[in-house]
Length: 277
Ligand SMILES: NC(=O)c1ccc[n+]([C@@H]2O[C@H](COP(=O)([O-])OP(=O)(O)OC[C@H]3O[C@@H](n4cnc5c(N)ncnc54)[C@H](OP(=O)(O)O)[C@@H]3O)[C@@H](O)[C@H]2O)c1
Image (cartoon, rainbow, N blue to C red; front, side, top):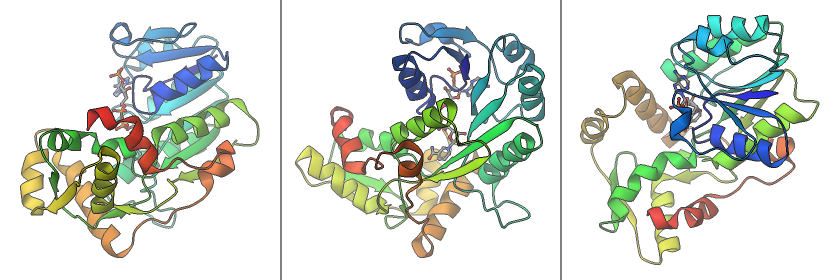
């Protein structure tokens, strides 16, 4: 039995679907499993990663876990997996981690690096998936493209090797179901480095009308996003964008190494989501 946490999320949902398609026994964990639709054969359980007792109750017979790094838990959660006899944890980590740094820069990398430290020390096998920026992050742009041809945001030239969530999910499935991935780290990227301006242009090409990214002041965007994103996380995101102007993350081949398939490009993700835009 494989336990999928974050099972309603951008990646976890696809991990559940793909494992179910392959006929692998799956238990999907969510705080509100009744509000989601699950593929046939999937056992959905209600649990909160912040309430480790509720997670323990979902661990019977579980051999491997796909782990969403919930803010609230950490040490107790990892100990619960080890106690229950889990043999392998595949962690949805972050490409923001700097292996050479004694102290990670910012809350996102710090938080994921702490999960990695706990898992390395746990005695269980681990695989760390460190994806770069998800293509899904720009879904909120649809509120602008639906009503006009401009996307207004900060850092037009901020660049990242954006990744399709399906590639992360397929890497997770490979790590969970085939040998050779124990104690490995994969920095998962998409196939090309794209700026915000490039992404806006490609959305326009798919929609068949010009769409352009109009750069606004950082403080203006901070005000707009403050209602949805906690201030320290927002500061981390802006720092990442600013740094990428000079030192963007590099594209690599880790998706193909793990899944055997080339990473999907941004254009194909936009084509799949064209109705939303
Ligand atoms: N977005 C990016 O560019 C990016 C890049 C690299 C790494 N990451 C990392 O990838 C992970 C997923 O990010 P995302 O933004 O894509 O998230 P997401 O899809 O919004 O998924 C969040 C999931 O976590 C579950 N969840 C949250 N808190 C929970 C809790 N206390 N107990 C149980 N389940 C809980 C939610 O499930 P329910 O609501 O159903 O309980 C939901 O399925 C994060 O760790 C993020 O830091 C993201």
